[in-house]
Length: 306
Ligand SMILES: Nc1nc2c(ncn2[C@@H]2O[C@H](COP(=O)(O)OP(=O)(O)OP(=O)(O)O)[C@@H](O)[C@H]2O)c(=O)[nH]1
Ligand SMILES: [Mg+2]
Image (cartoon, rainbow, N blue to C red; front, side, top):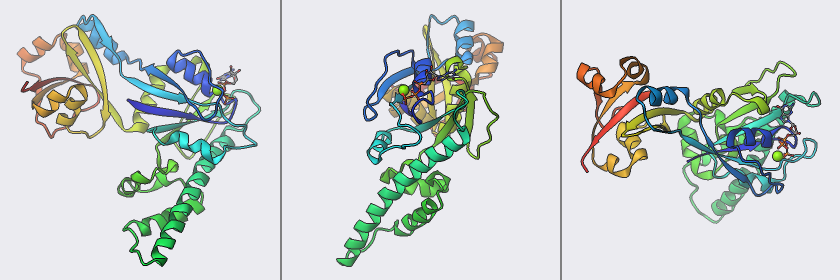
């Protein structure tokens, strides 16, 4: 399951957002142990599909959210806090724009800096270790030049997420946290906000969850496709550009190993036609091979050897 961390200073509204998304009411007061909660993602497209096809059961995709007690803005986060982020796919930087006592742009900038400083520390340890190894006659790994470039970026207070994709991929084993995709959640409407990075503005306590989910999906580079099998209509999140065969593997391993082809219809066409069988009879289904790619909103039937 996709994991998303909420990161922000104390009082910015992380727990309020967490509770709105997951429905989980209890709070955790230890800044080093996350409170985990699963959000079922509302999706009106899927609800419509289930309604038209009279599915008894609708299964929405889920994302796991992690919430921690934050540190006060003036104090900042201790280095060991950032271990918290090692296994998450996306950081949501929550900033206060509801209380009137905070500058949300300044908060976003200083949260970003906290990530940069943490990576700087991590990188200088790696470089020191390598220097010692080089002095002992060891040949340095091939990514040394890239690490030196990272050092320059971080010195300019630039997150490593600004690197081109290929270089980000090369760095992915080193767990730099400024490398992770992120979305700023501007909590509230007190002032108009302008940020250089992607942000989503809403009140945490009266959130349109579907809109927020769309923003998350975009930041994570995911698409959603649908299956309607027997009584169940279900939505599946997969990375955009994933091959059909691998996408089928998210449903079931057998579908990947035995993959033959996929029948595909955009959900809008299915809603218009009203039934999968009718669409089949009309000859409007598109058949895709293992290396083709699903589009966001495709309704899919997988043919596979059992
Ligand atoms: N009016 C309004 N109040 C909010 C909003 N979001 C949070 N609050 C209030 O602000 C206070 C702090 O919110 P929390 O969600 O607990 O903040 P937090 O980021 O979890 O804070 P820590 O756990 O201390 O790190 C609570 O009293 C919330 O009810 C909002 O969008 N609008
Ligand atoms: Mg909290």
